[in-house]
Length: 195
Image 1 (cartoon, rainbow, N blue to C red):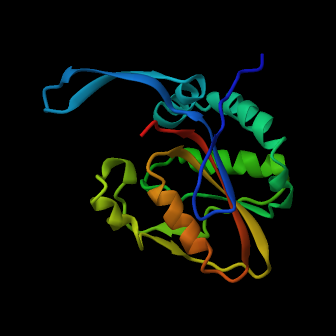
Image 2 (image 1 turned 30 degrees about the horizontal axis):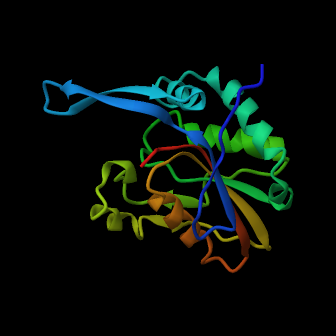
């Protein structure tokens, strides 16, 4: 059964970019927990729920459904015919044994018949942009480093699971563009927050 996604164009320093859908449809404040944290009842989009189950509950069976939705979109994205390599945004939690963005990047690269590399970029600051206010987002600048250079001219697709403010994605692309062999950078995120 084909599920509908609602692609959202992402504007940034990249050539072209999209989020496949919003992560959530609604979020209602339901109170404060015993530790003083706000609690919300969140209704996620279909794709948002799949991603949530895949990422936070490590339900690897959701990857096939997510990939079905991704391939519906990228099969029609003509610019990706020029892509030479797929790179994931470096994860904030490097100690996590299961890295969803690595899995997604690998599957997308396999579909596009290009390589995926997890060792080109590294995040040096483990602060997650989604947990920072707009004044603290400056901490992200310089937090991603390039560990390797490309030896020939390449077009890159950068993959992330969730687009919030765009700060981490922007920094990732900025760092990639310091390599003279990077021609164009495209971005794809699975979902986007409503903020």
